[in-house]
Image 1 (tube, rainbow, N blue to C red):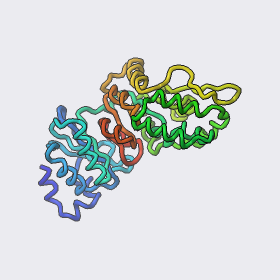
Image 2: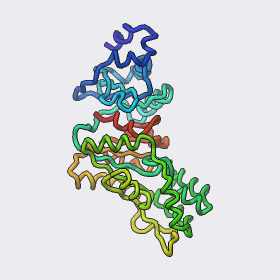
Image 3: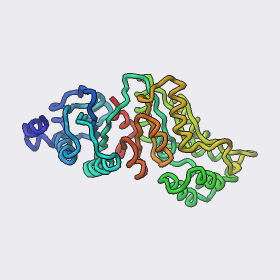
Image 4: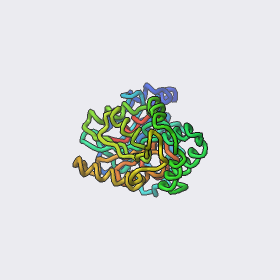
Length: 325
């Protein structure tokens, strides 16, 4: 089927993005099959052919078509349903990474997919996921310890050191910073591209959305209200006389608490686990990704791209929608 589809077109046609839409119809999903999703800007049939050739030993195509959101946000999105894949997850992740990086595509292979047609739950990390900065690093710059703190943050996000210990150490470095200066950071907080498209689309389809962050309530609660999200769970910085005390108030929001948040909110809103998604970039997001039906790495650290169900390596957060039905 696929060889004949590609062989019927000349090489110039294969390299034209217009032929993608002309040659493929909207996908009709068949139960019991795995789903290979390819996402790119002005993707061509030649690109699809290269992916299938690179993965021909593990991907046995059965149905091919366009995702329902193909072109909606300006991306080409091709869906290939194939026989279930038995290769180990880590080995599969490496193969998909090679293809994704060589062709500059987002590529995911899933055996289950949440659907937009039913209510669901998205739980998101905040720093370097929902927003493109690490707030603690920005505060540290104001305290004159930016390099020291950012180095510890990077190690924690790669999973090299324990999150709780790293957070306590980093927050201690913030002692004496004026709380008023946090407003300076918050006023210019940079949202990750695609955030609004993602959240609006999910809201329109009855989804609940929450932040679960090892960052701070000063920023997480603000983003919850700004984006119209349903909940936010994060750490509280100690304050005294208008300055930071260098302490975290209450229990630390770590990897396990993030996972517990997925479970608690899905129960609170009566959402089945099959309709849950966790989105993050750091090692402390992996446990909540395991808790959710779909774990999505967003411009993630290497260990996160390796362990997540799918990885967004290129483009905005709205790419998450392409890995749903």
